[in-house]
Length: 279
Image 1 (cartoon, rainbow, N blue to C red):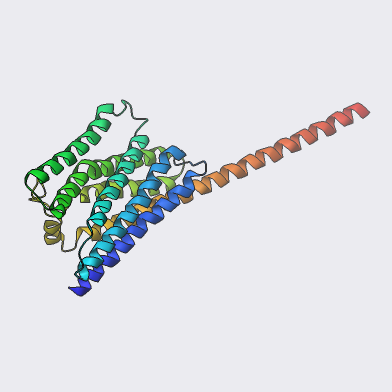
Image 2 (cartoon, rainbow, N blue to C red):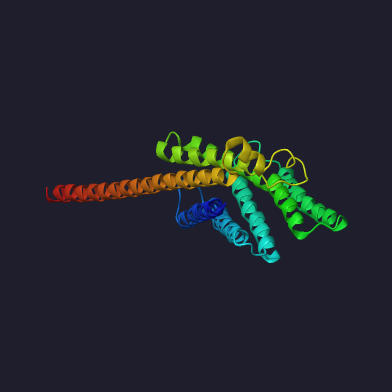
């Protein structure tokens, strides 16, 4: 059991590191003109990576306390839930930016309706908890499940659709970039679906499908699947960014070559005029 506990800690550490590195890469890329997208498109994705990575490291902290039979601070669990909401809200914002050119555009009621449902669900969860005198840990489990169902799952799926659309646009110009975006998009879609595997809770569908059921079906915890998909997302986006950087350099070299040829042509024209003047 001890080894399993330390195994979970390693998974959470690498899981958080993968998303934190993704946030760092997206942050650096958003400071430059990008062939993948504008800064307004990449900045929400960078914030998602940073915040979600920190969220997973708080999960690591909580697992360490459980491993050594230490009490869990209520502030740490509440902060973890808040970071979860913030991270997936920014992923949702990235998805909306990526899907903005859709025709017809995404209805505005889908955006605000989804966020409104999330807020309403959390408020109802709090009220039910107060009425039933639930303990804070039980309320946190319910709120975590609803946050993933109403925000994390649709955010992951919409981000996947946006990245796959970007991949199709890049197919004719840069196959390497298209492959990276496709890998990241497909991984984001699967990552969104893994958010359905929440801790066991007395709400639908957590009664029937949760992290315990996932473990019994596949033989490994859902955190392992999320770690694998987070790594694929980071690798896919990094591959796309490397391709974008290579494209920028190629365009710069092409512009410099065109400028040099123009200068040479001007010089040749001046020589011809001078020869005509002498004649």
